[in-house]
Length: 177
Image (cartoon, rainbow, N blue to C red; front, side, top):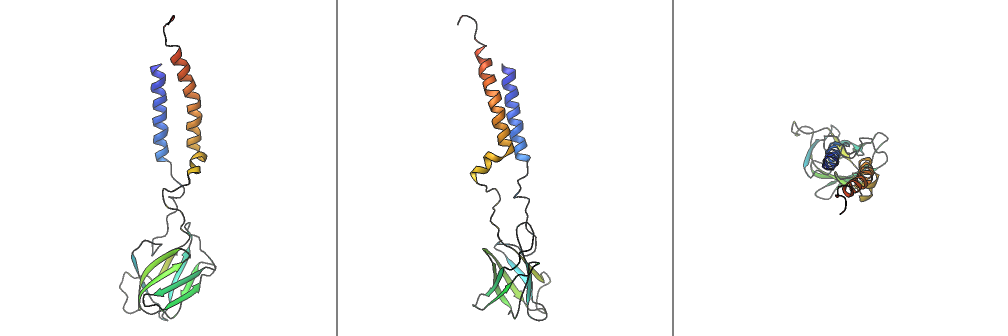
């Protein structure tokens, strides 16, 4: 009896350890690294020679988002708008230097816009904004637990192991008791 309980405990601990090692699909969807998403930080961007800001609009999987409105608003109120093209690219014309907020959908990116000559070396020539970022790492609907193959396996293992353990514990009583 003790051997069986020790075996069941070992199996349960092993399955729990395997569950920690399994990758979650949403965690693997890491956004691109340049000027991305609502990180709360400031991104330096360099205007091109014509005074325009160029960029790309992507989804969380890195695919371009077409025909989406992109708005760049200066802290003093002036704003510019554009639509993303088929490749997710957009160009905002006649932008002035200063602090701006780039918005596409529910995502916002704060950026400091520099003229071409005054931009620091770390400034980027093209902004990248990841829109439709609806999944937060570690956040899943409760119903997702029941469709997880590991959970289903644990339920089946428990359905087999518990009746066996109960049956075997009843046979451990000495005769005549």
